[in-house]
Image (cartoon, rainbow, N blue to C red):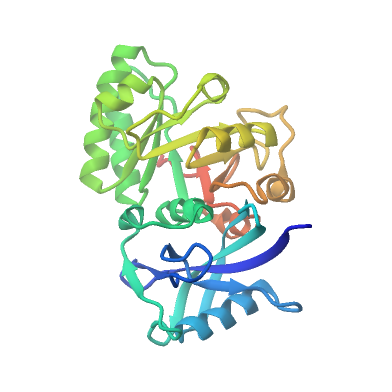
Length: 315
């Protein structure tokens, strides 16, 4: 007997305080007693936005005024296959309440990890917690680390909240010293940072995560313990699958556009990006020739947002 296929709309609903609404599933329902992001089945003939608006009105009594794609996830529960089409709701009218008697709760993004969700919701929790820009630092000049740190402080003051320290040209001792300085500045700004480098240095300086380059992604056997985030650089579907199997929380996929640093590599374009990330079980940032002006195109293609060096690093 063939499995049922269900297209489900879900909303990451954000209020004016930046809190996210979650609801508890009835004990008698599939995956009962767990928390979820509100939504329901898309009916025949409905657009995704129409289905989401109807479901949130029926479940919560709110009227969606602004929303955009967040992430799409394919998940096999064994008895049924679910395609989760998740949208971020950034404006709504009405006071959210459980119209079907379900408990609802507003929580801060960093509190989501303390709630039990269905397995298919794990990538949504990550997407809900991640910002829409991922700053990758340029290779610092070993003779001007003070200038590098000044630009980092400026980037943080401009609102960057997720930073990858990438410094392949430094010696390990210089990287060790720089990582401590980056950690202090990110903590002071309330930002999170990941190290693209030795895991031992990430642990030593209390990094929020580790970012794997292609070589590390290919050789790592299991997910390192004790890190909030594990991310990976990917260029094709095989690497995305590898990152997902390893338990990465998110990835970057490149190049979306042509770049001066890799002029001979054929860019994916947003259509190619969308094809590769559809159904991938983790958030994916677009990388390569991008700036904040590309966020709408990134979201429409299924991206978490944009990652970049030149487009996000202050002059």
